[in-house]
Length: 430
Image (cartoon, rainbow, N blue to C red; front, top):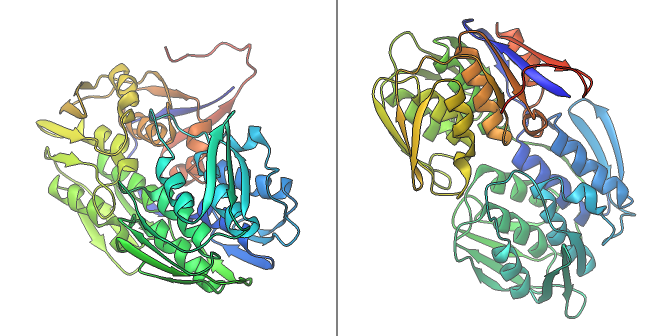
């Protein structure tokens, strides 16, 4: 059994370096399957989702070699499609990118249905719509995604997504890169990791324009070649540490960031009375007074990100007054609220909106990380709480935060990871 112990009350000070973006890294890793050449990926985060992704490629016959902690050489020349282990695939949501990569390279796919955090129903209908428009026959049966291109190669098409979907945009973009002819993807997601994927593929010889807008155009190519590519910084990790600084009344310098990616987060923090100084590749976050209530609605980029919902909710608990946080992306994002209530938060959920009573004094309690970002929220609450907070199910946190314990300890947090036998007694979350 692994869990975190966080003792609250410490002021944070110093520098925290942000790692590569999880959501960009996993998309790029699976896109490597398209390329029969060596690729060097830099600024890779050391997280379980990345390690699982590389292990999936290795199980398919790819060669994966770590050159250092954040740099990895990948060679998918001899990789084979349709053989990714089901148990690996079901452990992470982003494994569905294998379907687009296999269709793009082999003209067929056989991939287990993905797993990941449980936010209720997360359909892949838009992915399938895109694949079918590109000429594939696709079915989902027996826990597997099955697909086959009619003549062995996908063909370009015009695709309009019924709703904005980051996963579908990236998956169809991967599939269309080597399709015959031209593809136009409309109502595409605009997130930075969509742009990063397109930039990576273009570095390998793809012909993609419009990434970062709602219309992406792809001119299919016959082959791709290797390259060296650095993953962009993780804006959600950066935002998490920004909120940690605000919540603990501290000052942190957060480095290796792209400030433009943080604009929606910075804007809300400034609205609450937090000071943000933006520089070329770092931000300084500080607070020395009361937090002001505010209202937030999560939206696709460039709106306020759903992956910052739990962390921001924790901060709103400390603000002066009643705040409203509306979730418009995932149906089941508020499962973490019961954990915050254990620590003294007064929050009620009305449909898709959390009504948050401010001026909370968090009290330490045994809690769970019910998902990746909820786990980060529990850490933030623990940093503010009176006493020692124990956080279970930390495997969720490790899926997306590179070395979070050591990074926080470096800036003064009292946090540690404990490993004990299953039979041992320790405070358990109910």
